[in-house]
Image (cartoon, rainbow, N blue to C red; front, side):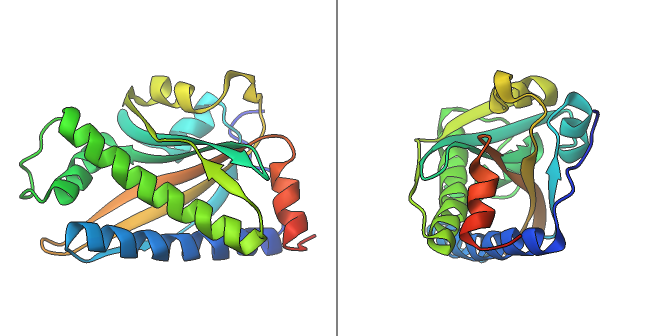
Length: 206
């Protein structure tokens, strides 16, 4: 199986899209407050992908990425990650640190901390929305930043024993003002074997 997508019903995708949109709204509010600037976050598409090499590259284009990942414990188990193109992580670091556009050219220790905090806010907002929507207790671990060539970096995010289980890929668009620019990233949920069924059972979606 290469680059396949499991066949989930429109009702299931709509339920997850509603959760993702709620999380995006919370994350946008938190980031806007933290950066003293307007940041809007939208969810253009949601899809499931099988995490083989071809699907990884199709879902996360670009030669190099930065990803902030957190493990999940509680009612469901798994892992989440916010994945950004390398250039996008530089632009987000500038916003977090209050610097001018184009002044951050590499991710140093301070920039790593800023990107990790942004990923923590965004991932935490999505998980909080999911937790409240489902009435489940979800506990994220502290964030870990992974950088580098796309294939190698993604290899650290997806568990080695994950096989060809589907993962949820939420395309996430950042619309930022003053100066105006758009960034695109991906929020992913890597579940354990029973997590998706638990989610759909909780929202009573067949």
